Structure formats: C-alpha cells, structure tokens
Amino acid sequence: MKMRWMAFAVLALGSTACSQTRVMQSDAASAVAPQMAVERFLQAANARDLHGMGQIFGTVDGPLMERQRRQDVELRMDAISSILKHDDYRIIREEMVAGRDDPTTRVMVNMTINGRSVDNVPFVVVRANSGRWLVQEVDLERVMAGG
Image (cartoon, rainbow, N blue to C red):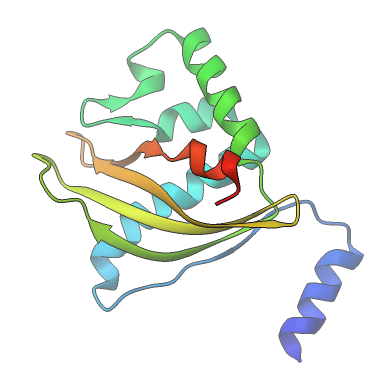
C-alpha cells in the first residue's frame, strides 16, 4: 500500500525522473561498482548528459571523453542516449564475462521504453586501469528490436 501511495505521489507531481531498482546478489560488495556504472550511465542517458555518458563509457584505458575528441564522443553518446531513453529499468543480475584479460562484468537490465518491456539488455562493464568501472558495450540492437 505504501509503494502505491509513493507511486501515485510521484505521478501526481509530474516527475520525469526514471525509477530504478537495484538487485543485489550475495556478493553485494563486488556487485555494487559495475551496477552503479550502469545506473549512472542510464541516468545520464535519460538526462541527455552527453559529457557524463562519455565519462562513464570507455575501455580499460579510460573513459572515451578523456581519450577522444569531445565532438566525436558527444555525437556517439547522443545516438546511444536516443536509443536508451527509458521510462524505467531494473537490474536483474550480473555475471562475470569469461575469457577477458581485465575484470569484466555483464549486467543484465530489464527496461521499459515507451511503455514497452525490453528484457535482458546486456551492459558489459570493465574495470579501467584507474580502478573505475566503465560501460564498454550495450546491446543497442536488442533495445531497438524490442527485446
């Protein structure tokens, strides 16, 4: 009942912020960083914060925004943002990516986009040399196909 009231209050206020649910596994401490990177990336995508997205998207060498021309990164993040614009999302699980030299995690996300469910969208997150976790890959084709 309390959750329904809260949901009604958010709708009544006309909030445009996306909601989020974090699902933690038993090894919660190691799961937090990759999941947080995905959450921050999705929030930045919804806000069309292209610079912020470019600071969270990258490889083991670091964020794209710090390694490529700003204009190129902004164009790439703008395209990604338009595809990932969502109403809601839920992190459902994460798993180690086998065969990688660097620590890499696949975070699976269920998304609601324009009222339509898109399930099991994989975000590949890698730990950069700096120790930060960065989104390296997003299955945009899955999102565009509707899951």
